[in-house]
Structure formats: structure tokens, C-alpha cells
Image (cartoon, rainbow, N blue to C red):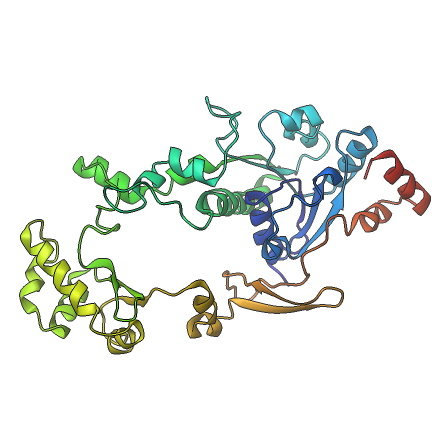
Length: 380
């Protein structure tokens, strides 16, 4: 038994946020069918992990027969997921208002950069843009230097894909009570704004506008910072709470620093200088071995390849080695959602573009000659 077993999802989204959402749903057991126009072959996200556990078919939604095929699928679906710009689903004839007349239980989720209304609704964008409008990019980096672009798509995955998956699952629970589906409007900018409790708390609670690289959690104080080690590597220190700071100061023989954890004067510079020199006395791994069993909140700054081999990551099985009959052996990132009774799992390798088109059409009752005609007519 899987948590979302029996839930049918039609995923019309492309690129990254929508497919990331449907990956979460698929890992939890949903039957996800990705639908794309064959014109977009070769333009996918190129990230196998995100495309796993799903079927894929081609379908031209601008063709009348393509629309009718989609309607047949939508009548039996639980969820439709799309990432078009506002207004496009209406022009294609696949918007929520039209589909819910065919299926009142349908849950319809739209993921866009800026939402279905507002002055930015029709603007194109990418992760970097949502982070910049949301105030996050301005806070990222070192004081006096330009903003630093995060190396992972925070808005796409967390503000878009994860919030969308959460919304879909909430709507599925609500449907059990009401018997009706509903529309979900996910804006990645909204999602980023919702992730600002800490800097907003400073603003509204203390009247302090957070500055780049100069807040409690972005490098202002020595107790929460990154330090270079003798081998040119780095360690991260997160001794925010007083009890952690006390242990570190005692370990390093500087009890005089204990009372100055959040000093705003010259003592702060003194502590910074001491820690920078101290941590350069040993290698990253030596410091980790020396401090890991103490309550000081220490971590090694690992390179990506090291992180994937780290014993904690290995123990948690966060990399899955998957063997597909046709595609062979591949490595995929595992689901972090650990359910004791209905676990997430990787069942299928990432589908090739259009791999299941004929299978889906045959399930709908179309014969081989009809399918070949559809290919010639550009329906699929």
C-alpha cells in the first residue's frame, strides 16, 4: 500500500517546478501521466531524478482530437497539474472551469511565477527572479559585495513544487469531506515571501532591515559562521544557543569570550580573529573528529561528491541505485519522506519522451491504425 495509491495525476507542466511536484506525488504512489506536445522533445529539464515514477505521452492540445483525448483522461483524473502562463489554459480549452463541468471531483493546480492575478501575472521568470522580487537574493552573500545566486533552485523546488504538492494533498483530504475538487493557485513569489519569518520578524519586531551577510543567520556573529581550515577546506559553526557557545569557548580555552557571544563592539572582531586563526591550525577532518562529540554544532563543508558519499547520507539511503531492464543501472536521489506504513519508493526509471503514448491510447480503446493516423495528423 502506498500513501497516494489510486490517485491519478495528469501533469501538463514542463521544466522544473511542476515535474518536481509530480515527482513527490509519484514517489508516494500516485499514477502520474506527463503530457507534452512533441514539439518540446529535447527541451526537458534533463534531470532524471525528477522524471522518475511517471509515464509520458505526447499530445497536441491545439488539435481538436488532442483536446478530446485529454478530456477523456481528465474525466477519470483526480488531479491536473499545469505550469502555463495565466490565460493559456483557457485558450487551449483545458482550464479548471471547463474541466470541472466534466469532473466535479477534479483538483486543478496551477504553478506560475507570480500567480493568477497582480501586475506581474504575465511576466516570464526563473528562480533567480522570484528570489530577487522576494528579497532573498538581496540578503544572500557578503557585506559590500553583489548578491550571490544560490546553486539550487529554491523557488522552483520549495516555493513552487513542494507547496504545490502540499496543496494537492490538502485538497485530496478536503475532497474526502466535501466530495468536490477545487482550484489551487501556486505562485513561486508567494512561496518565497512565505519563507521570510526570520527577516520579517526582525523588521516588524525590532524595526531592523536585514542587510546582506549581516544578520544573526548570515554571518554577523562569530558563533554562526564559516571558517577556513589548514587544508584550505572549511567548517561550519552553528553555536547559536548559549549552551553550545559555552562548550566551544571552554574547549578552546577562551572562557573570557563566553559573555561576548553577541558583542557589537571590538570584542566581536577579537573573537572573529581568534577563531579564524585557531581553525587554521588543523585540517577540516581533524576539527570534525575533535569537536563532533561535543555540543557545539559543527559541520564539515563538503563538496558535492563528498556529500553523496558521506556516511550519514549513505546510512539514510538518500541515493538509490536503480536498475531498469532497458536503461540499465542508474543513480537517483531518494525521497526524504519516510513513512513507516506507506513508504515512498522509486518504482520506474525516468520515462523517455512519449514512451507511453501508444500504451495510454490503447487503454482508451484506440486501435493501432487509429494511432498511426494520429501520428500522421500531428495529434500525438
